[in-house]
Length: 455
Image: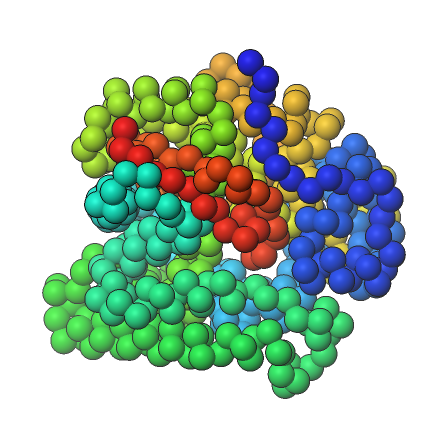
């Protein structure tokens, strides 16, 4: 059988000019990569934004993300883009402020704590499956939007114990809020002062104001409940955030930081898991062998009931589908750092103040690291498969700043995918064109129209 090769932009024969590269960066960075990026370990040179080094050698990635991570910090561009929406949460904080938050929040994502959120995740998936089933046979769905709604529901149950879903308008506005995250304005690229309005973000201001106010309201209500009767507070992430303490000092997180981390968890959690699930459903719709294997597994493990913690280790092929989806369509297609001092990576000099990048989009398709890199093949993540270098597959980053919620996202993706596949079969609408585009995550350009039928 011919292997399925998922859609992706064709690499360029030669680099874009500096001006064209800046334009592409604003619209869709996936169109910037050349054939050389997928063949060579390191490429370095000047761009309109300064000196940049693209690294795909696993040993070199380990060097700057782990071994010498203190010399490679988040660059100003990322902070200019994300701080207006996410504030000073874990994703955007740096230096001592980041260390305090990381220490305080580590306990929120232990295996036991994360497993405790499975009932909420399963309930959200069951609600979605029931809703799709009620729409009748072969109902047309915009699956990318549906997955955003699903993961927001799961996160709402985990963070607010369903507080968001009580306001129907909140679900709609939240989707607009997450779409606005990470919008890069030309003024951001060139380091314009923050007081100059960004047109792209101005357009999203009504949505962000609505959602920020709603989150503030829910946080205020919970803060008052904990003060009046701590035992009455739900054991969700919001309560755990208020209870979190820095193990070195015993200090609680300021309310402002609690709020910023709620927005970070909602934003990052919704975008990463929803895009992974949308792509997984699309990939399965195009590979009937893979779909048959995952259906056989979920039929044996779940039947049509909700997933629980005991099921997760048994959903081996389901997890392999998620892993392969993240290889082909990584939620963070590009990770960049700024060199504080001069350094050397893979024999290449890195000037102080320059940008160093590893791109999971490139790394996961690099021809020196993967057999048949462009093919969809979940078997490469099954037990007994060829070992994968730890720093050749990095869907959640690496080093001290590896995504703290990775286990939460993977658990939600496995639970949700298994429960959807157990009861429904989803196929791409005939004639639909699918192509990824790089927003804050990799999203299907123009949406993902699919038809759902009951199995």
